[in-house]
Amino acid sequence: MARQLFGDNINCQLDGQSIGQSFLNTKCFINGTRTNLIGPTYATLPILYHDYYQWIPIVLLLLAFSFYLPFRIWSRHIHNFMEELTTKIEDEESCDRIFQVITLSKGNRLYWKTWALECVYAVHLMIHIILLNQFFHRLLSLSGWSWSAIPLLFPEIATCFYDYFGRGLQTLGKFQWLMPLNTLYRKIFFVVYVMCSVLIPLHVIFFLYRMIMALRMGRNWINMWWCVQISKQAAKTWHATKIE
Image (cartoon, rainbow, N blue to C red; front, side):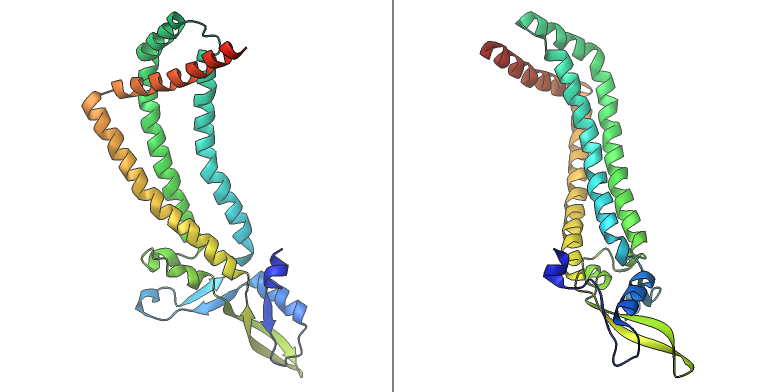
């Protein structure tokens, strides 16, 4: 599909040089290309090597998997626990006994588990950002975490150098490398950038909300949360029982 939309993933301009097109494309793809960065902002990184080009699909797959995994583990744990509690509920007295058990024994555990989850999510998000910054040679931090770094990371045209022998002499060839697939990568990582920009303030807001609730109500707000979850699950169980 990518070939149909964009043509070849890479295409080096030969300029009449006696080098095979396919060979040079493969060589530049393996060794990477580079872009000269201009300005005082990039004084510590005057040349950006695009040696990460072939790793982008794998990085996107790992990002998608790692973003989904923590939520899946937590939701699966809560869902299984709710089902175990409410599967055999047939009357209101059974439900009341479960409420008492939860509020007496489970509230403390869930209180600390919730705060641990908040910390894990925060560390999880920061690790993603730090690893992406290192993967892209710290260009994100050098640009002040601005979205303007994305076009620099994925240029449409970059430079590739290659030593070859021509007419008995070793020559350093400088070739322009057209990378049409970077047009798609720009859009994908712009979405990733926006998602991280939204998740960070949302996480701060939820963290402050839970802190305020904990200061005002102590661990009771956790018990209230458990009661709501059990009520929802119990309502589904009773509804299914009546249908049967």
